[in-house]
Each structure stands twice: as C-alpha cells, then as structure tokens.
Image (cartoon, rainbow, N blue to C red):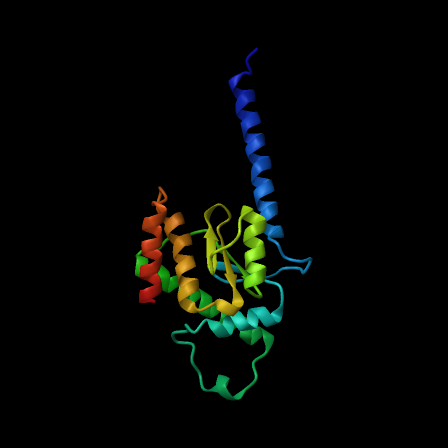
Length: 192
C-alpha cells in the first residue's frame, strides 16, 4: 500500500516540525539551571543573559565603541538604562563593522547571543545541545542563529568572529564550506 504524495509530504513536514521543536527546546534548556533568561534587544541582535552582573561584565569586556566616548561617563555613575543603551550601541557597532569588513550588508534576522557566566556553564550548554564534551571558547549554531559565549572570556574580537559566522551563513544563498567561513571570520577578528 502506498501513501499519496500530499499525505506523504504532510507527514514529512510534521516529522520535520517535531524534530525542529526538539532541537530548539534542547537549545533553550542549554544546560543551565532554572535561572530565567532575560533579553536585551538591539538593532541586530537579541542578547540573552541570566543576571545583571553578567550583562554588565559583557558590556565592560566589549571595548568597541566608535563615537560613544564622553567625559561625563567617567565621573558619573550610570543607571541600568544607560548601561543597557551603551551595550546595545557597542554590540550594534561591532555588527555593523563586521558587515563593513565582509562587505555583506543586507537585512538579516537578528542573531541571538547567549551569555553564560563562566566556562563551566558554557561547556554544560554545549554538552546538553550536542551530547559531546566542549573544546571551544565560543561557538555559533546556524540552525538556531545563536552565538554561545562565556562572559569571563569575551572580547570584541571574539564577538566579531562569531557575528561574522552568522552574517556569512545568512548573506550568501548557499552556505560556504566551514573552512572558508572560518577563514573569513578570522579575517574579521584581525581587522576589527
């Protein structure tokens, strides 16, 4: 007995949907405790963090802010809103610079940036998602359009490298070979 083409297609779509939900559910569980995730939306990204302390440290580690320097900031304590605004500006400036270096400018879906408090939590997330031990300082998953990064080991070059992977993978109609994408991402890191 054979199944008709429309029914067969529908069953494949249903199976694909369940697989996708499983992967996304696994990714969002990502090895962390029951600590809730907070979201900071920027123009190009969605920064996901679990504590204000981690977000603040992330912002302090990103030393890329062309046109954002002012002397007033040196002598006054910044509010949460001011710090969030500064982080948004820094991350968006890095994103735009990566697009400029690669000469790959077009509208793309926002890339998610998951910030983990330390190496242990980052590695636990990797093991939860992929089922293998982690040997990376940070990584990017194309299917989820998500960057995974450890706040204690973050700098603007590393962030630019991972953002480059997202831009490269979503700009071209056909994703380049992994080695080619890695060469381009390293180029971005060096020329930021």
